[in-house]
Length: 192
Image (cartoon, rainbow, N blue to C red):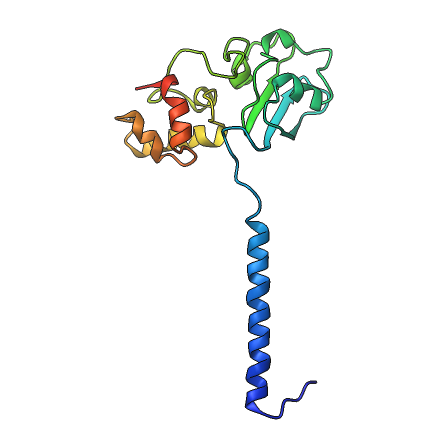
């Protein structure tokens, strides 16, 4: 055991320990803050869930510019039971989205989410009709660019907290997960 003869020595040791603790805390926080947040504009990697008639359904890290075909390949390819004609293989992958490859004869096409055959233009922009945010289900909202399952659920929760109805499109900015950039992307595709 270390024996310190004076109060001055004890204070010196306490000071050194304090400085070391602050330095370690600063280093640790600096390390954790180097992880970049998700950038919806597409210059960082993001997660995509691939499910349905693929060999290895999973969540994988996608790179900007990847398309649905890349997700299918990352899951080991489609199985012999897959109906790829129902999936837009050329659609750009959206951050934190789910790609579903339907089985032949499957009738519940809601599972396709944002990657149905006609839902996206070649540049990845949503081209379906405008979605009414006051009546849309979470599944319908999930089809919008920049909206995943969590944000879709947050939109429906905010709608309920407002008495079941948005009174302006700008209220979407009050939804967790929708900032000004995402809102600008959504505006052309939503209505009241």
